[in-house]
Amino acid sequence: HPWARRRTPLTPGELAATPLILREHGSGTRQVLDAALAVHGPLAPPLLELSSTTAVKGAAESGAGPCVLSELALGEELSARRLVKVPIAGARLRRQLRAVWPSGHRPTGPARDLLSLTRSEPSGGTA
Image 1 (spheres, rainbow, N blue to C red):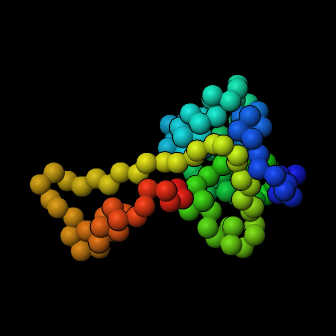
Image 2: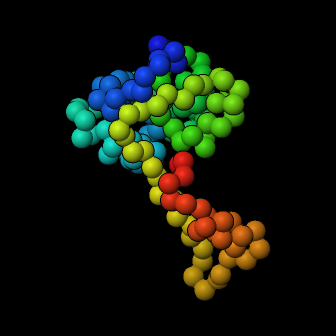
């Protein structure tokens, strides 16, 4: 895709106007993206709407088109240079994650340790 060679960040308007490979309506990634881009103009119809992150990554890797996913979900693909991260100027694409557990039961062991780590991380991390 031409964006892979681009030297300047995309604008939110460019991203909004581009048909993308997206997760389905209702996914957290899609909700964050739609909300962030809606203020920058009409959203292009999706190129593809897929029900899993794995399917979106596979379609993008095959050359079907660009996608927007969590950087954490793309770690292996970015490290292996199968996909390229393209900066977006002025768009804040951050997801909130929530931990849940049964009422009356406090997390123990590794679950407790994970919660402790997430609570100590600065809020400006990459989602």
